[in-house]
Image 1 (cartoon, rainbow, N blue to C red):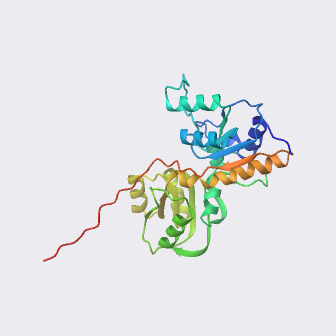
Image 2 (image 1 turned 30 degrees about the horizontal axis):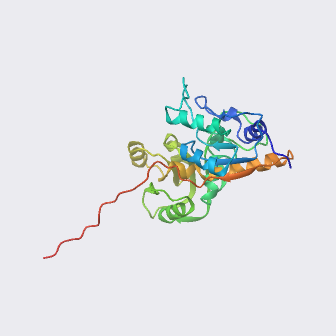
Image 3 (image 1 turned 90 degrees about the horizontal axis):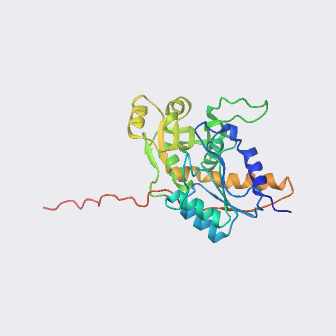
Length: 286
């Protein structure tokens, strides 16, 4: 098989994760790189940080595909005087392209939340918040988050333990809100920051798995009788999508008679590097 150009890679990824599905504030697609350059190998990662760039240099890849964008606001300089400028300069000087699929990958079907749900054993999926973008009859429904069913009812404690076992370990860990003996069968998930959809999850599920849940929002949700909550690290919740995206690229290119080598980054880019717990009480003696 032949090797595709960066432009052909973009075409396949745009088909899997249509840019039209991206939020209007988002910035998706190619960030840097020659679209006519031959692409032999692609590294998939959650975050476009320098540690991932270093990994790409060691692996000698031609392209990095990330979930999170490098830039979300306008910039006036990409000089290497800032962290993001240094990333751009390093990529360009080594001939490595950068592409991101963010909220378009969140909303696509299958997308980020489908990959998370599958990792947790949740099936029969439907969007938690369906998109308002019309789809052709017969196409899978798109939208934010997913709701589905476990193969059997578990206690909240059992399900939380299975979540911790299924996802990459982080210092953030897995936080749980709710009675640990609560039975759960219907599960809502949202890869990434999902506390904006607490009300939707409360109506749809026994437990909601997402990231970046805020104190007051969680308190209010529980006080109003909302479902149990499981808060996972943002990076860990989106990491399962990388394998899905790599598979979509390989399949799409294969149908066109070309191929690339894909690498899914195992590098944790969760920003929290330690968790300090108080020392256990030694008690007192008399």
